[in-house]
Length: 357
Ligand code: NAD
Image (cartoon, protein in one colour):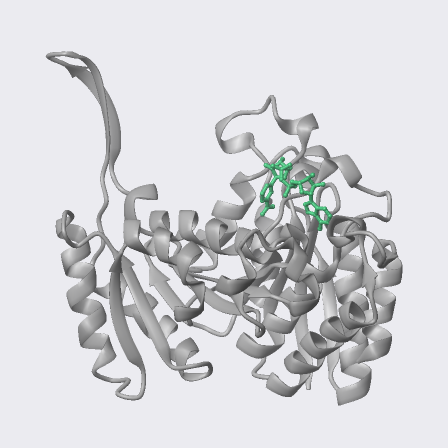
């Protein structure tokens, strides 16, 4: 099959890691008889330098015409003085909203080979490692609600509004249950229904959606309890379904449990098959262009692309297995090396994963 992928290398280590992800995709294409056609696009600091705006319309148009989007990372100190709409990060929000990407999927997988990087005790993790997916609502809630500041009786006051419609909750809940059906069939919905009216609506809609998925076990946790449970009993989780703000916080907590930021992929999905796939880390300007970046998060992001946008489960699994095999052989980039392992650079890591496919 043929697939068109819009590729946004972005800034810092973005170009280094995206190159390796393309190498792996090309190998998948060769082995399983698919063709991946790439169209390179500008966004973030690279776009500011070239055309003086962080998200050119041409990039949005190319992404919309593609089957999927692969993004490295954007931002860096040279653009830190810019404000508001001119900031490189504006490109991310702009792309999510232009492409209607309302679901952020972040797996937090702890590989047994990287057990030492996990800050939790062996008695909590056990032998099998961890495998959790956080499904975070991405285009609604308090980050997008009405906000403002005003003079009040006690001086200046400010407010942000958390608003969700039934339709918004329903579509993210459906996304979470669909993912759970392909995994261990358990959804934990996280809210603050003991305090927030908005969370009570969230919970009732999630319960309605659950009726269409009788095989999936559903439970509910308040967000404060969920934050605790993630560190005292993370193995209870399969899919965590939550709002934009709670998901922002919990997905970072879940990812830190796994140990390395350089290992974690993400997907942002909408109601069509078009998704945006990117590592969770930033542009790491401190190691850009030095062959030091870990390309695994980006390589695992293209595995997610194959699974969620192209429905190529076998090919996705092949990439994940090749990543495990490289770790099993003891190869590590600097960020995940702990001593005796064989240290390799970005390019060598990408090449080895491609070869192990
Ligand atoms: P960062 O994730 O870029 O880096 C944090 C630390 O982790 C650094 O020491 C870095 O060297 C290391 N690191 C990150 N990814 C790595 C990898 N693949 N391999 C090895 N080491 C890695 O976060 P930051 O330093 O807070 O931000 C740097 C820039 O990235 C900022 O401009 C920020 O706005 C931007 N940013 C972009 C995104 C994105 O594009 N999605 C996300 C977060 C931050």
